[in-house]
Length: 218
Image (cartoon, rainbow, N blue to C red):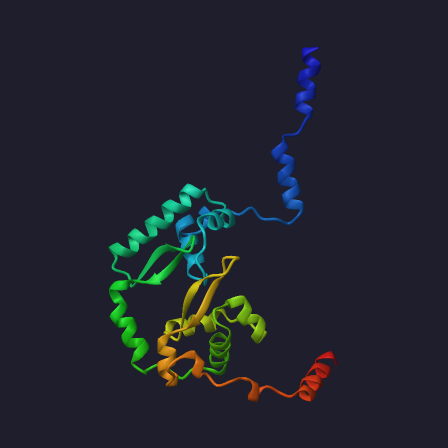
């Protein structure tokens, strides 16, 4: 009887062997964050460089398949490295997540750049996005993108860097809301948002709207 049991055990393939074959058959490649040159810490840093809103530790841990405790340790380690090297940016928590910000020690340099008038003129895309924010604030990036019909991530970053817009808290779903700054009013020579020109005179009449809708259906 013991011999039968031994034969049966040898005949059963290991569970992980079957999983590996199924993964290979499905064309999936196992993700190993430690295979990157800088490991998990550099991978986390790379993600933080492209996000436009604070990203939570849980989101990083889930996406990169790194233990939550390790993610927290890497985030704190990155900020310690930035501080020790006197980098111009810092990594800090905000709104339930982490994000890269310019370091407050360099605020005078940032302010001089923003207010010096040396920047190139705003592009048409920037002006259109700024108009949406001015008239619909506070408004999220997704809402701005829906109005313009394009991705506005890069344009929003530009407007933030120039001090024309700022973060105005969070919506119910956690999305960052944006609004214009006093500097925006200063640049336009306005005392308040109430002085913005009404939009009605610039909107097409009903007949024109019908023609636009009809053209979109062709």
